[in-house]
Amino acid sequence: MNTVEKAPILTVDNLKVHFPVDVGTIFTRKKTLKAVDGVSFQLYEGETLAVVGESGCGKSTLGRAVLQLLHNTDGQVVWMGQNITGNSVKEMRPLRKDMQIIFQDPLASLDPRMTIGEIIAEPLVTHHPKLSKDAVKDRVREMMDIVGLLPRMINRYPHEFSGGQCQRIGIARAMILQPKVIVCDEPVSALDVSIQAQIINLLGELQKKFGLSLLFISHDLSIVRHISHRVMVLYLGNVMEVADKDDLYNSPQHPYTQALISAVPVPDPEARKKRVVLKGDLPSPINPPSGCVFRTRCLYADEQCAQTKPELINMGHSTSGENHQVSCHKVTVINQ
Image: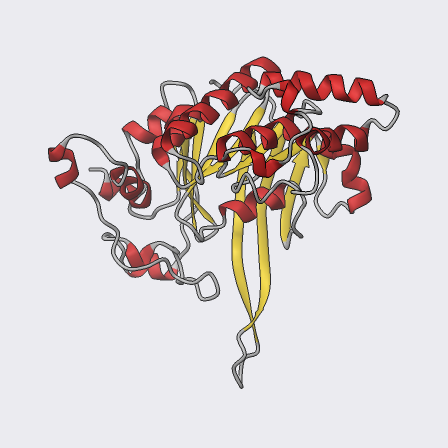
């Protein structure tokens, strides 16, 4: 998908989400956890932008901050030309019909006391209170059929469904208002592999049918490859690399991206021998490394990396016309 000539429907500029943390020591009682620390990106109509990285890198926090479900410490979120940063609950309410979310745990995200018909209908009743009960039921049944649920199951409860079916219920709930953007927060990580493929295919079909834009959060690069148009790699709340999907998988520039792609299971035993294995553990976002946050696990890090935070620079255009951006002091050395 060539987005160079299009105007974005969502623009995030230098977004930061910091949390005060009580560390409980005698001399220092409060520290700052930098969950998201200066992330910028654009999302276009009909596009899937994948956000990938290890657990604890700030992916879910970013998704919730974009929807203004979390307070933004700094930066801007611009939705269709309107700055919505810091909007109150009341100000966000009319925008919610266009901005929805699908959660990671399908069963835990559904109210066990409500029938699935009531669960799916709730956003419709909230935003269109004048609709008759029959009209609401008709819309719910129609959406159930679209996502692959039998409409006759409308009066059943969530515990009567499998994990994959519960995720279809969550998708139906998110889709009932026909939003423009859906944040998918690791929507298949709790599902079996065969069911994962079904849900990914369903999201792809819905995107084509309704012109959806997806912010798809995942730690699994093998899944991301099947649904994304562009990929943004996140590490400790910082953007490491952004590129067109094919360009990123075929020619990853950042050492962190190379390690993530190298970890994807492949049947070739020779390829497995060439894997890039990251050393050490993910640092704490309360005490991130100085300079480049990835330097403590990077094979190429030197004094410059410890002293200066690298900028996100353009490496040129891919064959699709997209910018390939990398945040690394040593990118030219690494890829020689």
